[in-house]
Length: 195
Image (cartoon, rainbow, N blue to C red; front, side):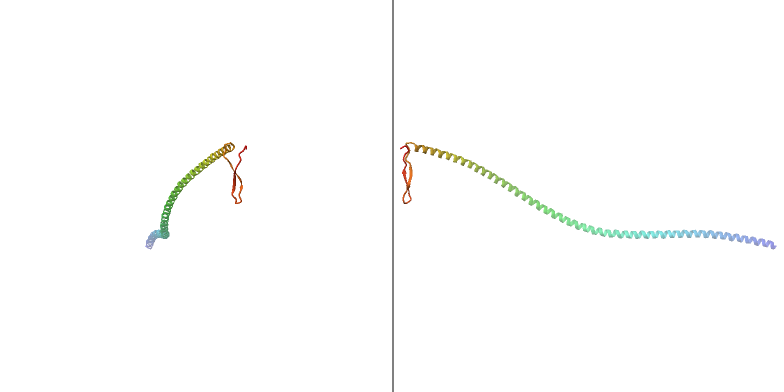
């Protein structure tokens, strides 16, 4: 009976050991499962932290980028204002240049008109001068011809006079005979040649 009780006790112990081993196995599996869950949770948390860090870095980058673009927008607004101001100045300058160009064109037209008038007047004066020069040349030619005709006429008259003097029918000729005490000249008849 003692043996039987010992065998039963051993069986109980074996059953208890088996139960305890089974319980340990379940606890090990549970622990392993919980460990895996904890590792997964840690991985998720690390991933979340990493994602949060990346998100924070992205937020900071976007904030920096937003600041940059805000600064660029301010600069662009200033540049736009400067461009508008420069455009206004350029427009005013262009309008001023157009006004100056119109005035210069008007002045050039007036100068061209005056130059045309002067050219026409110069041409009239030149034609008048050429005409007067031609008339003067003609008059000089006519005067030369008139002098030649007069010289020829005088030469003929002198020849006729010479012929008359030499002829017997020549009228008496006066020659200077001296002067009186008062200074008056005295004339006498010249003797005819051949006497």
